[in-house]
Structure formats: structure tokens, C-alpha cells
Length: 433
Image 1 (cartoon, rainbow, N blue to C red):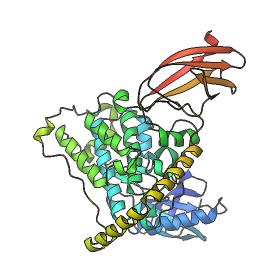
Image 2 (cartoon, rainbow, N blue to C red):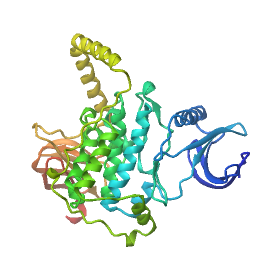
Image 3 (spheres, rainbow, N blue to C red):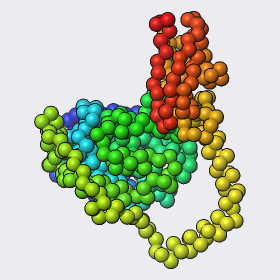
């Protein structure tokens, strides 16, 4: 077992491609901690070393009850390490795995605490860039903490390189566009969706398919997967998951305000004690019955909060400059970005059937059994691809005839009814002929 002065390492918890996390006793402060240690000889060792140093530097700027702390950094046998706060309890990913559909009041409480954590990060001009259930820690006392700043970056130094976990990345990250606080909010929306439904909003199969879904595909409606979900909560999640970053909430504080407003409307008062109770005994946890009041009798819906990082004078100068630049160059810039977006999407998306009409598309997730790499798929006699398809087919709403030509078993035709915004999952079984 590794040795670091002042710490007694007694368990290895997680081993990754570049770092290993150990559980240890901090003798100086008489507490249990985690030690994140760079592995000597790790692939891209310099990159991992830089990531650890950046994580340490950024964490020094952040202090909030909903953020997992980094107590110190140092060198052990010339290997850099971080000493992290140990949170006794499951990660949100582990909790979702155990309980596919968590109580709605618990979901709202966790979302509120997560909104506070994201707000604290953004107020310090930092982007997290890897918000996902495995990085959200739940203590047995009912505390919620966001951790792992390995992918975080200063807002003034954000790269446009694709970074993060594919199923939780924003469309602008996938397309290599400029990222902002709105990108973290998209990841927040993906986490909220998963808490409510027990299913990932976008992560399905291959990385290519996942990235295609992020850019082009809407997840299955929460109302269909879990009809008892309050309409207002569904709308909050949908706004977070909007493809256009400008149409999402402007900041995490506004999301928090809407969640509080929603709680008032349904008479909820969930606290850390309730989360602790659910973690200790989920089977006996008494879920709160949602009894909505007339939202019109409440205070007005929350106002949008604005972040102000610079003085009004500087802001006025910047706005004037941006306006003049926009007048001079808007046409050229618009053309440039349209072409760049089209090229980026073409790299992510595979060849799929494109709807001819301007209606909102639906999707067909088509599987063929017995599987064959040579099955030709046609929609109304138009060739669309070779099965197995890596991404759902984008189709106009309505009735379609699908023809599948299996190289060994012949041709089979099926009819499908496509609904706008929904994904129909269909398996064509040639063995049943």
C-alpha cells in the first residue's frame, strides 16, 4: 500500500487510467479523507499532472457547503496528490441504480442543492464541465455535494475542445462551439431527467450515437415515462435541455428560484432530514402526496436573475463595441457559423433518413433480429442505411412503410406510426416469418 506522510492509507476505492483514489486516515486532523494520486507511468502523464494541478488551483477559489472540499495538495514520492473530503454515503449514480424512480420530493430537493453548488462555481467564474450523477455525493446526513473538478476551467480560459462525459455534454460542446454557464445547465438538466425517470436522457449505445442524440434528438418525454411528474417540473427540465443555449435559464440561481416556487405550489418542505431518511430506509420512506394549489394565488413566477461580473460603465462600453461589431460583421459571422455548424453536425451524425417536410421530426429506433451487418433498410422505397443502425431514423410524423432486406432471410415489410418529438422503438424479427 502507498505511503504519504501524515496519512494512513487503508483502502483503494477507484483506479482510473491516470489516477487512483484511496481512502485514508488524516492523523493531523483525525478524520477520514480521500487521496487522489497520480499513477507513475500513466498514459498522458503530463496531461494528468496538469489536470491535478488545475483542480487544486480552482478548488482554492471555491468554498460552499454543496461543494466537496479539497483540503490540500502535495507530492508523495514525487507523485502529485490531492486530499479530498470524504463523503460517507452513495453517489447519485448509485442511488439511481438502486431506485429507478426516486420520490419526486427527494428529486426536487437534490436538484435545489445541486443548483446552489453550480451557482457557487459560476459566481467564481469557473465552469465544471463534467456534471453527472457519479460526481454528485450524498452524505448519510442528507447533504448534497458536487465534486470532481478535474475537467473544470476558468471562464476566461475555456477551451473549445470536446471534454466531459458524452451522455451529459451540451450540444455546443459536441459541436466545438463556445461554451458558457449554459453548458453546465444542460448537464444539470440531463441529471434531473435521470433522477426523475431512472434512465439516461441521451446515453444509449455507442459514443457516436450518443453525440448524435445530443445534437439532433429529444429525449423521451418525462410525462410518458413517469406521468405523475408535475407539469411544471417537466417544463423546468425541458428548458434546461433546450438545444439552443440562449433559450435555457440564464443561471443556476434562476433554476433554484423556480424549484422553490414549485415546492411552494405543491406544499413541499423536503429537507436534508428527509433525504437522510430515504437513504437509510428507502422502503419505508413515506412519499409526499403532491397536492397542488392554484399557482395564480402564489407570488409571481420567479424573475430572471442576472450575473454582473463587471461595472455598469465597463458593461456599457462592451455593449456598444459589440453592437458596432455586430452591425459591421453580422452577415459574415452568421454565414461562417452556419457553415461550421453544418460541417460539425455532419461529422457527428451518421447517414439517416431526413424528413421532407418542415414538421417537427419523430424518431424510429430500429433493430433487426437475427442481427446482420448487411441488412438494407428502406423507408417508402428510399434507401436509408445498413442495419444495425447506430442512430435512430429521423422521420416525418405519420404512417410509414419500412422495408428491410436481410442478406440470408429475404425481405420483410412493416408499418410504423411516427409521432412528432417521440421515439418509437421497433424490432423486426425475421425468425417469425
